[in-house]
Length: 194
Image (cartoon, rainbow, N blue to C red; front, top):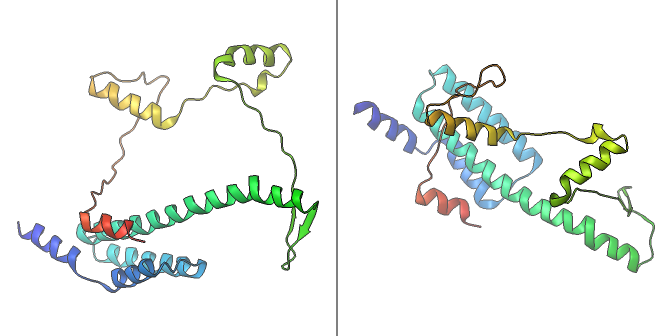
C-alpha cells in the first residue's frame, strides 16, 4: 500500500520535463531543433531514471509523455501526408498543365517536374489468372506469398488460448513483455485539444 501511494505521488509531481513538454505541445512548437532538444532531454531523463534504479512510477510517467508526443507527431504527419498527396497528385500537376510548364525551379534551387508514372495491381477476383499469366510469360519471380506478421501473431495467440501451439519445426514464437497505457479523461482531452 505504501509503495502504491509513493508511486502515485511520484507520478503526479510536476517535474520540469512535464512542464516543458506541456508548453511545447500547448504552443504547437514542433521544430527539428525542438525534436532534437526533446530527444536529448528524454535520453537524459531515461539515463537518470536508470541510475536511480528504474523506479516504475518514473518510467511509466516518461512512457506517458513520450507516447503523448508521438501521438501529436503522428497526427502532424498524417495531415502532412494528406497535404503532400494532394499537392503531388492533383494540385501541382493541374497548375503545371494550366500554366503550360514542364519544369519549375524554386528560389532555393529545387526543381520540380511533373512526370507520368505507371502503377499496376492485380484485380482481387483475377488473382489466380494473373499469377498464371505471369508464370506463362516467364515472370514467376514477381509472385510472392506473404503472411502478415501481426496477423500471424494474433492467430498464434488465439491458438494458444485454445491450448494449441503452432508447430515448432516451421514457426518460431516467443513471449515479449509489453506495456499498455490507459489514458485518463484529462489526458485524452489534452491530446485532442488543438
